[in-house]
View (cartoon, helix red, strand yellow):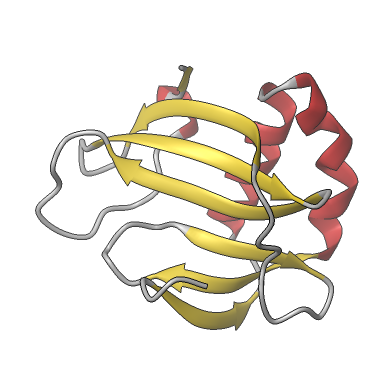
Length: 122
């Protein structure tokens, strides 16, 4: 994990789960193959910069996989705060590993996940 990621062990929130499910359903063709992993996925780290990026791992692992990333979904959207963001769902070594959310323009504070209704493919 990078120094920007704080270890955290918790289940996905309903909002995070709904977003990951949507990204898998609407992402790349390969993304659909990862849908069965949703039942066993949990959050193992959260970014400390104020963005809602989370590291994900299957079963009882304490860290996400760290091999090179396969991008399962790549979208842009808008948060409830009106911030334009990019969102990428990553897999590594055949496992969902990260939900990356980044501000497209400079954000001056913490922000939330984008609304599903605002998402458009990049």
